[in-house]
Amino acid sequence: MTRRTVRIAMNGVTGRMGYRQHLVRSILAIREQGGLDLGDGEVLWPEPVLVGRRAHALEELAARHGLTEWSTDLDAVLADDTIDIYFDAQVTSARVEAIKKAIAAGKHIYTEKPTATDVEGALDLARLARDSGIKHGVVQDKIFLPGLLKLKRL
Image (tube, rainbow, N blue to C red; front, side, top):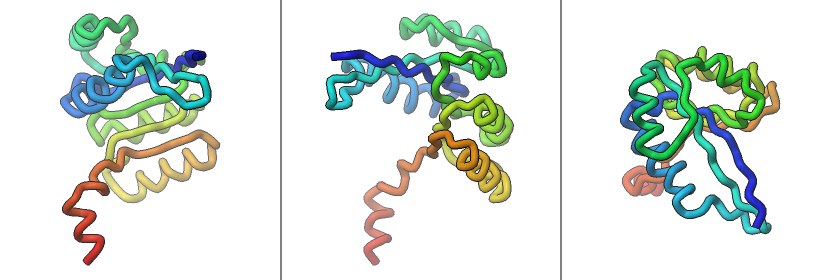
């Protein structure tokens, strides 16, 4: 098997959702399983780079999970050509500006919801991402909840 590393800037991992759901239950879980087998002889290995405002919290999280890369400088992380994906789990009010920077830096985007505090901001981000040619997505886990699926059948 060939291992392909994908470097992911993970902004907002000191918050509950960014830490528990995305870092621990997703990225670190994939790593614990040996990576993501793509079925073609290639294994995708996620390499997180933790990003946030509080250096001491980032350093502690990195040490707790055997990670080596963290930063409080989003601009420097986005300027790093080895970063493939930008993931955003920070507060919604900070999300639009950060995602715009990531799009401008040519990073693929995956973000928590909502993408913006208003419809205009969300549509602006969607257009920017589409027009830039990057891959982009928003966490849509709630649409698969049993209650919502039952409502859809009504």
